[in-house]
Length: 114
Length: 113
Image 1 (cartoon, rainbow over the protein chains, first blue to last red):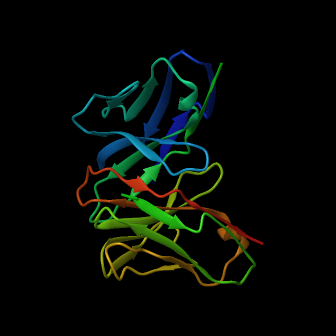
Image 2: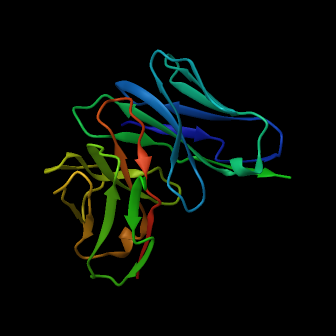
């Protein structure tokens, strides 16, 4: 069964600090891995999409890494801001015959405090 | 552009009632999907469509119907609501292709009492 596990479940950091969120997956055959940011009461918003051949991808202060051999990914947030407080969801897509079948992690709830 | 628009944002139903959750997109995307999000669980796929006139079941389709008569609209119907359907529902769209970004609506919070 395809699964995506994220850690930690929740995290509190001070504004200006860095943090790293982890994602392990057992989705096969692998197509791509995505990180989404979901603000409270809103829909998820895409941060990055990485394919098998991509090791690192950045989007502003967000940098995602992918190790397809160990089936692990991380999302690093640099110089955190209060607006980074949100749930960060790791999503893995497998090759399928059609549709948009994604396997979602349960998310890491990040809170940035003053 | 509005992107993906879901209505209503909130709804309370009594057990056994029916209703339709609306989803409209102005991005001309082929793919549309419905997910539900429950506490402690990742989003789960209910139904999806790869184009007008084509729909298919996802991971948790029981109790839900969909249709896709136009590219723009993808309504989700609850025929006889049950408390187990209390959840937050998200509609998503993406263009064709394996590595295209998915765009989500704002969600509909549904409570069945």
